[in-house]
Length: 83
Image (tube, one colour):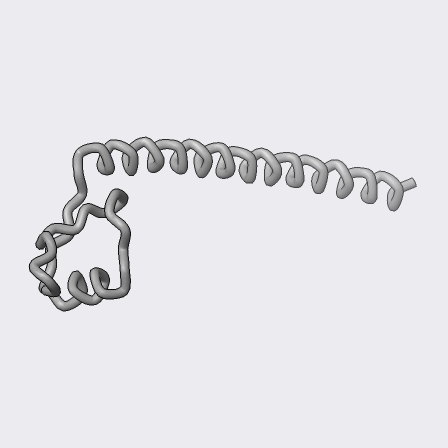
């Protein structure tokens, strides 16, 4: 540790310098998540989960539309071929 700095690094609050990153990687400093940062991470995770859920539903919807259109086009081609 350099210059008797505080041994804890508060992720999401403190400025991460190259020296602090090296100290954390070497185990010379201990990183902690404060309650405020944990709450923020959890809120952001919930937002990301909602976005992913909406995109999954969108992809499913597009696939359903594609499947329906595919069957309609097959039926049209079959009808033209039998005329």
